[in-house]
Amino acid sequence: MARRIILCDGLASARLWGLIGTQDDEVLTWIPRRGESRSRPPGFHVLQGGLCTQAIGRLNPKADDAFAVVSDEVAFARAAVGVIAEAEPEAPLLMLSDRVEAEKLPEHRCLRATGLRSLIRDDVDEEFSHLGNLRRLVELYALLDPCEKVGILLQPDPDPDGIAAGVALRALLGRKTPTAPLISFGEVKRPENIAMVQALGIEVRVLSEEELEEFDALALVDVQPTVFSEEPPERLREVEVVIDHHPERSGYETVIRDIRPSYGATATILTEYLRAGDIELHAKLATALTYGIKTDTQLLGRETSPRDMAAFAYLHAHHSPALLRRIERPALPRDGLRAMGRALARTEIVDGIHLLVLGRVREDVIPQVADLGLQAEGAEWAIAAGIVQRDLVFSVRNVGYVRAAGDVVRAVVEGLGVGGGHRSMAKGIIPLKAFREVYGATTRPVIREALLDAFTRAIHRDD
Ligand SMILES: [Mn+2]
Image (tube, rainbow, N blue to C red; front, side):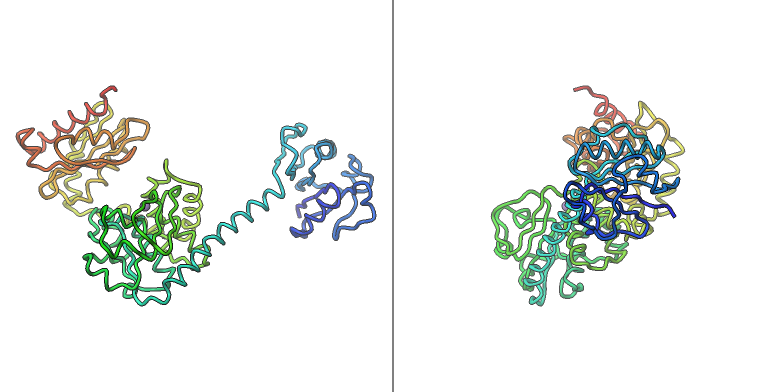
């Protein structure tokens, strides 16, 4: 069995090691400092002969043994590295010290240096952070448990982060839809968000301001009352709970306020609540939260905090990849596939721009075609355009190191329609009427030529 040979500098180090808990595979040695020779830290043996090559040799190190040195003295640490390297040049060595910097140590072919107390300290800080979340949770229970009906209010056209956070809050409260429905002033509209609620079986009830009266408490997640309007309705001026990651707004009162603008997603805050409360994480809930964090941070991109990364890692272990896939890649209808086939048959990449014009399609086909388009060899940009009801809708993707997709789309739709997005993904909508007025027709060749020209100019324009 591979052993760990531990060398502790003085009584305090040996005692600390003993407190952390020794293991069967550890050979525990220590070197008493002046005046400590009568002490006996339990389980430890004095390194006979002091810190020297012979003493290390007498421990009979084997090829797969590893060493650890615990010391806060530069002289001791340096000497220890030297004698261990001399006795066992191949043996890996872990230096555990909160005072000795790695640069102060002699050259060694396999040495890792880290603090010991700082490791424990980090874990303690982490636990305090869990405790802070647990306190929030206790407050939440005290406030909401006595309420018969709690409304979990989301933004109009709720996004995955809001929906996931709402579902998580309901799970935390141990409630089901009848006593804690997800509510919104506007329905879920975007195709990718509809895919999420469908795949996860989530219901978002659309209601009017008057209907808020039926709730004993209102909990707002991923939104604050003054988002709905500068002068929110009476009931929203005093709410019970606000949990959000958007910048703090004024103009309303709430009993519990947990606003963390440094977080990339509200789903991250709720994930921390779930962890703090030791609440069992079902695959569906974990998947919803995973998707919420992914979309709100643009796949853990720029606005991601270490908290989001930690929550994501925690959720990842519990989520269902199959379910996540179903949300991210909804099943394509057959006529959508045929439209894609026709567009691909005539595929062309001009100046790194891959434009695919689909004709009339279901809206959720368009972003998936754009994703596929970006996989084409030589494509830096992929644009998929299709006609949905009375609009020309297009999705844009790019490789990330070029001009921001959102800016390009805004330039393309200027004066014609609406659009926007992020660094590498964007969406635009131009009413067919407006398009026809400018370009004369809405046939596929006309759309193709107009968009290619507009995108080429927006992408390659220099400013
Ligand atoms: Mn959000």
